Image 1 (cartoon, rainbow, N blue to C red):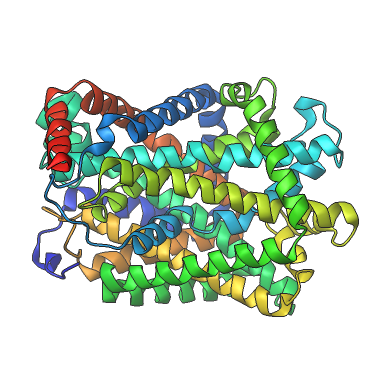
Image 2: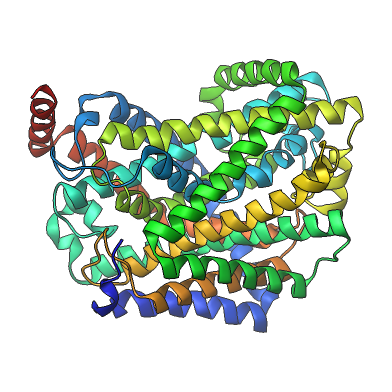
Length: 527
């Protein structure tokens, strides 16, 4: 990317209200953190208990639509036109989308969530009548994690991104969330109060969602430092970690998208690959393969029931705290993550885009949970490690460190995991602060950098909220405050995302101009 947008004017009508809310939340968290936590808790409970059914319907529709886009003739359309050439290599592209999208979720919950279900720690199995620590509890744990962390979440990211990319590169609309809704409302949605409202809601959603992810990550690193090195958790530790992460992504921001984010994403993804391969080799390989099969079968056998069950069968301990929380944070991320995915997709086809942002990361999530989750189950069952006890004592994110203590070369792997977590946080903070800054800049382009001061302001603000919510909003699971915050972000942007789903259906399957683009793409291939 170039560094030319610094001179472009700021969209103050977007910047000011967003900064007022985000900055105000940070200040409020310091002055009256109990009130902030109670308010976000109230919004969390109301939004998911009232609209849980809607989240489920939206999730399933999004998945079906993503599959149709991937495998239909629409997949032949190239962003930027038939002659457009891709800028990034396949490896670099996938590294940026993978690490920018998952943040630290896989490391955070690849062991913890599986064992929480297996041990029924917070009552997740109660609605199904499954006995904790039983064989079926292990099957359920694998199947439910596959459901929560594979095709549906990545379909949400990919759908928003493919719509924004097509409208920006092929229909020549602005690089904004509002512009992606022009198939429904025409250009009037990109003018006046509507564009401001839509973009402000999207910025607030991603800021709240990112603060939640960073907050969970801070809690995770804090428990790791305590488990491995005896460093007690507390505000001082979290402030230091926040400062390190902020400094890391600021340095990456200074060097720009082509160097900073690309390099950081490449490093993080390579660490992920090495950890995955290493654990597959040294872990119970045959058990991993068996549990991957059984978990997949268990998930597919219950796919439609899980897909349309807000609370009736699973109960709130499972559905509210896990699946609906996951859907809320993925939807909170989707519109602005879609802008980032669009910015680096020039020259790629719709099918390539969906493969890299939907199919491959979903497959990576499946393999990750199969390897890490199955190994953790085997060690828990055999008595090699008591991960469940660690979670009960230290909170929902504490199990991973008890697990890593028993991995061969754990003394080396634990600091590597901590470094990879910091790198992953920094990659996500860098990509999202860049995207937010672009959305707050008039006439922003995919090949230009937003103003540096904007990226720093957004990154520091988001990091501050994350730190505050971890320090003062712990709760039963240790990260309740940030979970409330994320759910608020999803509730804020849910309507916008639903409109994006409708816009995608109209523009990709009902619009004559899109059919012409498909024909042009086919003609180019034949030539």
